[in-house]
Length: 134
Length: 141
Image (cartoon, rainbow over all chains, first blue to last red; front, side, top):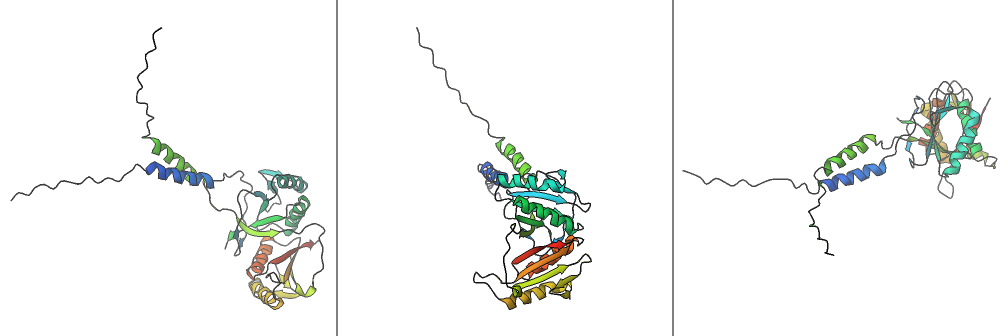
């Protein structure tokens, strides 16, 4: 017995709105992207349980200090006396500045305190100790 | 003068077939370069210069860390694992301010030779205990 051949329905996903969806994703990623400006020094920050997210990524300045006692701001090795004018200038440009201190876990507190004293002179009082999540 | 003959308008279409490809490429670029939430840390507010004020000494918990990493809380030697417990107890016993913050002020003092990681671990433990008023005292040289 012969059966009539069933007509195959054409099944295709509509792709007309594909560019719109991709555009939306693209715009999202463009907005959230903040390009990494500086590489800094190789440091291993200590781990802490109360690690929090920084409020904003756009009002952050970075300072690195490694176990050899070197201090780096914006990829330049600076001496302690230079910290205050650099930070004062950054603060003048951005009043909501937070300084993220990326300090190696083997650094001695003497250096950390000296840096903090410079910050107090520059009036950049909001800081954050960069830590890893425990 | 004869009127210029109007040119026949051709169908001028920008080809959009490759648009998704271009946008995809851009998307992939931004996907690769985006790093979300890499900046983590313990926020701290440094004290203003010259702003000294009297506080009730009973509301202060003195935490000292020496260069060997030993911790002294109000003259009692404490292990790092017990810091959270001891401070939490003190926070509770001192009660709350009218603004809902604990009254207890934790003063963390270090030596110049104290390791940064020891300081952060103590700071972390104090924060975990719920203390919000933390002061960093200048180290003894």
